Length: 560
Ligand code: ZN
Ligand code: ZN
Image (cartoon, rainbow, N blue to C red):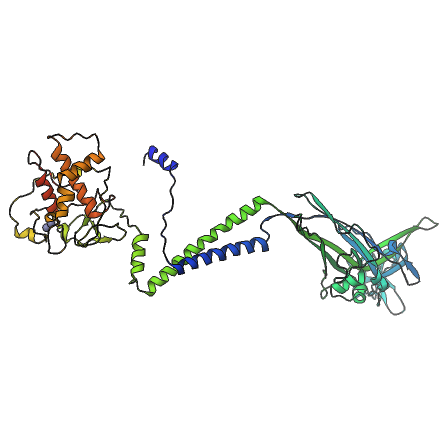
């Protein structure tokens, strides 16, 4: 294809060819499948909210813990038990502690342990330090109490006792403390800000999963309960609890719904090294200028507030994009229908007339090879395709039936219309070599069944108008009227070429060529095959005899 042809093809619209099967069952099934797929697409769009644009939540947290308790002869208020954490979105509530008072930087015996217990100074290497010890060894072995001697260390003395935390926990009644969580969220794409606190906050409310799920004030005991934990147990060694706030916001005006859902779970492992603790100290100056401190090893619960969620808002582009990607599902209908037809075809072993016609209509066979010719017999209802080169007479060469062929005439009363093709190359149908004239030789009898063909040595010219013995088409009134009649041909020629001037010099040539075309259109019922169709020997001779050339120098019939 040249550039011109390519440009032409760019400006043409090609539509897919379709076959309509007139079957109520097939039609209903197809409609049902289309409806099912359309319904499925609607359900998927609604369920997965594919009509909305999504944005991730941006969040900020503020917390405030409230509660006072009297424990260990001391009043514990917010400043005492809430210790600010380095982590963002976390708060800590002390539940238990080990206090070591009046520590000074000096020498004292280490707390007894497998590594620190000694019998003599040799066991304590001066200057060495152990990761678990409280200070640096001085090299002396001294008495810790009446029963045991330990290595002496330079440390904050007296050293902290490595006892287990008190049980029950000192601040076990902190389960009645409450925490107010203020959570501000923002969706940057939609420029929408939402707060988890209602405009009119009932400050006396307390969160309850069923009765008050939106109240932002939580009782610590309830949080632990929701996380399936026992507060008194966790209070002893501490723990880490996650407060999850899940926002799933529909920001469309008509279906606006944007409220938090709270859930709770324990984060630290309950079985392997459970708990959460750390140390801090308070320092003083003694009158003599020395620094003294009180060491606290505090146990408590760290609450991590985790906020996640998405906001969604209707977006036409998103809808078109998602529905567009799902429209391809309609293609499944064709696949399913085709599959069912194939199953039906297999079940009937391809014998059903419906499937034969279906295949003929559906598949148009187009041989890739240029080495093909088409032949048509008057006593067969189809056109046959034959591959070259020929090894025997064209009449006896096996071919394949062209299933998708249009209606052609045959022995029966079927009729074909006789339209004309514009692009017929007359010269292809010239007889280039003189055929031998004379009586029918025994040779021609082998391939002629009408008795009117002329003998010839060339395989591609050995073609009769019939497949079986019978009357030659050239002897029929129809052939006379449709192919040979000069009035018919002249009218048809003038119909096609209104300005054609038929002179004595060219009249026979024009009529002869047009007669070949007439026969092909009539006999093959198609215009597509014109270039490759072969006119039977008897017909060619009849036409040639009717409209002979001035000088008898026919150059043969070209089907190359
Ligand atoms: Zn014949
Ligand atoms: Zn014939």
